[in-house]
Image (cartoon, rainbow, N blue to C red; front, side, top):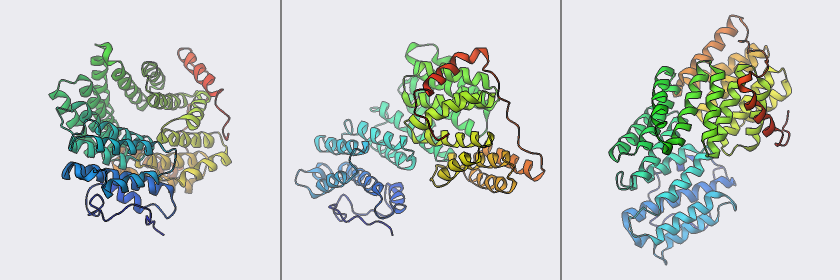
Amino acid sequence: MMHRFVGPVDWGSAVFDDMVGARHLPYFAELANLTDGDPAWRSVSAGLVVLRLVDAWITEGAGVVAADGWGVRSVEAAIEEMPAGQPARALLRSVVDAVKESPAGDMHAIAPRLMAYARALDLDAKWALAADVYETVIAHVHPVEESDVAITAHLRLGACQRFLGALTEASRTFETASAIATEVNDIVGILKAQIGTAKLALARGNMPGAERILDETIARAAQSDDLVEVRAVALQDRADVAFHRARYDLAVELAYRSRELTTDSINRDRLLADIAAAFYMLGVHTAAKDAYQILEATAQEQYIRWLASINLMEIAARDGSMPLFERYRRALAGTTLPPALEARFHLQTAESHEALGQASAALDAAGRARDVAERYQFNEMLFAAEAVVARVTQGRGAVPLAPEISVPASLRDIAATIRDLRSKVPAGGD
C-alpha cells in the first residue's frame, strides 16, 4: 500500500498546490516508491514542501511566509514530523528560518543552507534528490554576482548526474561551471570543472583523454599554494587513471600523495578505497582487505560503504569462502544501488561466480551487468561483462589475479599505516 500523509500539512494551500507535472519530480518519484510506514516518507515529503515554499517565496513574495500564514506553519509541521536526530531536519528548519527572515527574492542566506541540505542528500547517495536541490539553487542565484554558489552548485550537480549515469547532461553542466568560472576569473572553479570533465572521460573509457586533462590540471594547480586541495583532487583522479592502465603501484603512490594533501574527510575515505583497489590488483591482498574493512565500518558516505562491501564480497569469493561471499551478495542484492554501483555489483558478482566455478550464475550476473552498462553507457564495465561471457562460454576460466606478494619496499609505510588503522576498528563479519 502506498503511503498517504495524514498529518498536519495542508496540501491544498498555496505552497502545496499544482504538485503533479511541476518542479521537483524526483521527489514525487521517490515518494511513489516508499511504502506506508516508511520513515523516509516524512523526510522526503518535508524536503519537497520546503522546496515548494522557496519556489512560492521567490514567485509570490514575502506574504507566503507571513507569521500567521498557514503555508509556512504547515511546512514547519512537516519538518517536525521527520525522524529525530536526522541531519536534514535541522538543515530544512534553517532554510525555513532564513526564508522568513530574508527580503523577498534575496537568496544570500538561503542558498548556502539549501546547498548544505543537498550535500546531505548527496552523501546519503540520494543523487536524484540532491540534483533537484542543486538545480533549485542554480535557478535562483545570479551566476556572476553569486558566482561562488553558482559554480559549486553546477559542480555538485554534474557529479550527481555522473553518478546517475546521465553523462551527456553532466558534460553540459561542467561546461557551464567552467564558463561561469572563466567569466569571474575563478581559477579554482575552472580547474574543478576540468576535473569533472576528466571523470566523464574516464567513465566513457577515454583514458588518454582523462590522463591529458588531469596532468594539465595537476601542473596548473602546482603553481600556487592556494590550489593544494585542487591538486589533491586531481592527483586522486590521476591515480584512478593509473589504476585503469594497470599501473597499480603508481596508483597507490598517487592516491596516498593525494590523501596526504587533502583535509576533506570524505575524500580521504574515497582515497582509501582507491588505495585498497590498487593494492588488491597489485597482489597485496591483506592490505586491500584491511582498507575495505575500515571503510565498511567507518566511511561517512553510503556509496563508499556499498563499494567496500562489493569488494569484500569479491575477496571472499577469490579466497574460496562461499558462506561469506553469499552473505555479502544477498545483502547487496536486496539493496537499491545507483546505476554505476549496480553495474559494478553485477559485474563483480559475475567474476566471483566465475572464480568459484559457477558458470551458469556467472553468465546470469554478467548479463545483468551488461544490461545496466548498456543503458547508462558505462563502456568499460560493458567490455568487462562481455569478457566474462566470452571466457565462461569458451571454458577459458577466470582471469587469474596477481598472486599474494610481499609489500613492495616503496609501499611498505603505506601498508603499515593501513594495518594500524584496521587494528582500531571492531572486527567485522570475516
